[in-house]
Length: 264
Image (tube, one colour):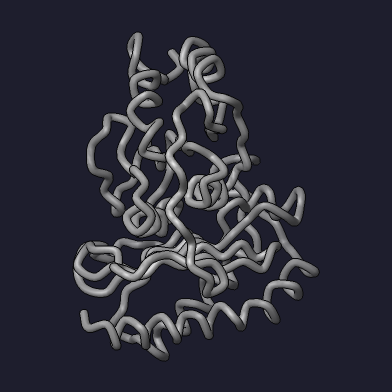
């Protein structure tokens, strides 16, 4: 894809993000919450409306592009063929409902399976993070610098303690400097992207949870792999880590020691 073509697409998507500042406050004011699989699996009118709005925007401006997203059936989508947008309209829905904070919009643009543009919009803080293939990463148009290398003993790491067995938990707690968990894969990953966390581990992400992180990792020299240290498929997702290069191997050794991290 030509550089100018990618710039045109990026400009259009930035214009779409700007429209959300008028839309989201009204949606939150009249927020309606329902459940999907269980009482902890929430969805709101905010999620649904943002996704529908973007789908309409694509139909108007890029009708040949596909949308692979959380709040829709994706049976007709071929994620690795042609122009595909992968979207989580609200990543951290529970945080939105319970806190009205710590949530974001994740958006990744792929062409024939290759990441070209990535966005994580931390709406409560008004910070739009963007990565462009072969052209770096930015926050509100200001360049991001690659994080300094962090060994595990100096790093704060992020993971959901409820899904790991006790032995793995204790090894991680003992080896890392400290532990945090925001509850939004996009925002936990952003802390790694900015160098505040050494790593974020997620044992059950969906494609839309991780769509943007691939390009940020590539442009900023981070590691993003499966928990078996293999390449990660954006179209199927699965257990993954995004990590500072200096602590990546050490964390995976812990995650896979003594039979692995999963609870029995």
